[in-house]
Picture (tube, rainbow, N blue to C red):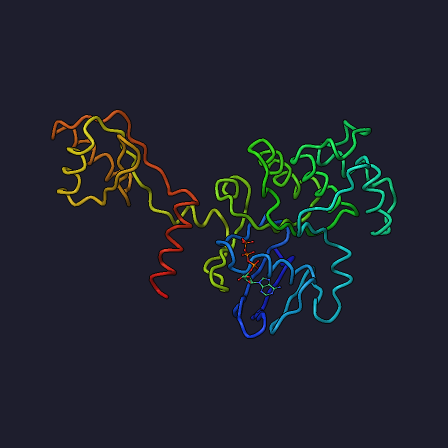
Length: 305
Ligand SMILES: Nc1ncnc2c1ncn2[C@@H]1O[C@H](COP(=O)(O)OP(=O)(O)OP(=O)(O)O)[C@@H](O)[C@H]1O
């Protein structure tokens, strides 16, 4: 896969304060790329740089093969962006609103039906935007970004402020986009459960540096499994496992988590529990979630600092 976005030794200071520090990032074409990080770590700043809204302090930003410092216009014409809360005109219908987008982007009105069908808003042509739900408004903003069939979509927290139904709608839409339109999607998010269901790749930004970038699959493959045990006597089981040198912790009222287990170690542990006359209702051996991985990465980064 060639790169849709390439950041090379990118640094950005606000005044004397460094916010992005010598970042290297490659977003492969065709990927659904999630950009993660806690509040204030520089995600929106990076997105604003990629979309040509901020100047950089040093380094190189290449988007769709175009050097953004030299001439951003050709790349901007081939990308769609959703950077701030969308300004939608409440007194208009979606068709009327998107006509303005067509004029600005200099594309024919025929594209409106295509983008409305992609975001599933084609069934209510006469409904005023004022009556849209938050999820519908966000889908309309995405339709606007999709006008002109961009090769790259850059979205800053596209599910921010949505209810679970709205989040699901946007997730399904994002997952379908690379196949439906062939575009690369780069989006920032705090919703790790959603990212886990959506993204093909991710990068983790912390204190202005990239801690990890790669495929989600790499994280899944590298993670050591943990055993979730649902037990009758939680204290007795905890004491037994601790004495037997397992890395055990409490989670929930009747549950224990035993870290770093293989399948063989788990079946040996079941036999030990039975031999020690310790009952358990359920035992599930699972890879750590993205949220657990994220916490681990943060803890490691803080320990190094
Ligand atoms: N225009 C600006 N002038 C000065 N400082 C800024 C400016 N924009 C952002 N910052 C600072 O840069 C840092 C990174 O902000 P940024 O908005 O990029 O973080 P973020 O990761 O997107 O956070 P969040 O998840 O809360 O949106 C913050 O400390 C912020 O206060």
